[in-house]
Length: 209
Image 1 (cartoon, rainbow, N blue to C red):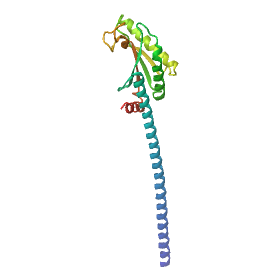
Image 2: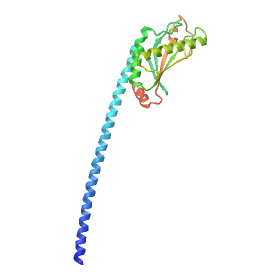
Image 3: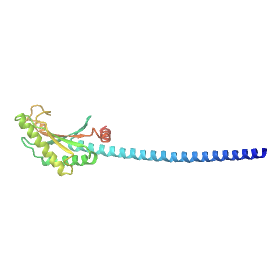
Image 4: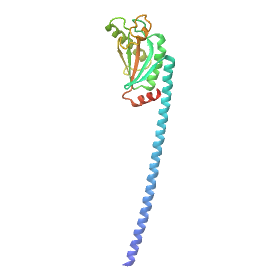
């Protein structure tokens, strides 16, 4: 009977040792697997950060170009980004001028590159000559003309909206017809809505710093 007990004890000890070895081996394997996963996550995060940094740098260069080449005023707002270009109109006219087409071409390129999923609103304005109703219609036609031009440059109908604000928000108060500064009142402004796209908003905010 005592021999059987000794044999049983030895067997149990062997099982315990084997179990410890298996448990240790499993632990090491799980740790190696987890280390591999963490390294992959770090690598992916580093690659994403590098890509984001490159996008911010590229956008900063493009926005700087809009400012220096075309005198654009770019402002980050809660709902998006406002682009004020020197895209103006002749008195009582809604035709896109040839000298403004280069600036519009560049804006279309940047909008498609960085804000392809955003809605872009073209806001039209007029100088105070004429009736309020007429100026509202004229400003809308100016916005529609610019919208049509941007569509011809590859932007989509769904992405673009046009709205007229008439003689409101005058740059030079009261300037009309041939008055100094009246042309500044006959303009369009672009608002890129990034409220629902935190990445575009954050990239733009970083690029504008």
